[in-house]
Image (cartoon, rainbow, N blue to C red; front, side, top):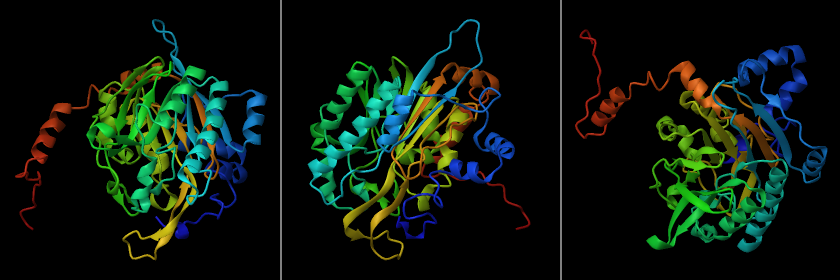
Length: 401
């Protein structure tokens, strides 16, 4: 969407603040802020989600490199028969580092160098699972409907982004989720929006293709790729059962549900979305999915404003423009007990880290009984009727009408 109507500063801040949290901290007294945070962000096991101290060296390095660095911890109740299952997870949000007019190899290499810097910081912090944003290795040129951006597409198994992430996964003993633009050479060079899952020893565990494709304003992505064909896989890694719900899929509750039915304990949502279009929805959807499906969610959003060489239109009567609007970052984690972390900055690259006890997933399933009370057979019948051409809605009409 054209960003000219967004009520934010030119630098992408909210009235000079990097995030809603920073704004609240400035203007709400501390004793009142605690109540605000409890309602807005929930409590984890009866207390606020705790910040985790990181080494001064790492904090100083992040400041020197100008990226936001935050860390938090989600706990679970102690159990008598199971030890804690604590996993440290990281989310990386990044802006593009070279203008979209630069040679493509230069654009890609600049992003590689920037993300390597943040992934190495994650490794130094002991992160075991890390997810990058949607199409992290390129500008989000899908607004333009120009096919030159397909040049960034690569093999999920052996492309340059995959090779880089394999190197870093081996270096840090880290599972890395790398969402890319995939070129499927085995099927005529077809393009897909794909997340590659790389294990902690550097091997490619598999991939997942974006299930739902937007056709909203500038997000007319079906110009480049169509709906994915990989189902709803859950990857059993050394650090838990992980799934990937790419971007627009977060608007579809049954998409989230399918990953839960397949046993996910952590679902990562790499995204690219702009303020005018979706920002009021952003703090809600990942958190709601975590609650409804009794798993953790990591929501990652691209950051920055990307300007393209040629003007394009949105099909809404507005003048042609050269940017989507502002990608507002604000990446965060949500837990199954309705708690969540604060967000990363709205206008800065960042690394969000969270320790999470995966035992909390089963504890919340036991507490709320969502699976036990779900009535899947009822909805299966309703959906089976709905997809038939002769479907008739179950509407009881007032006879006086």
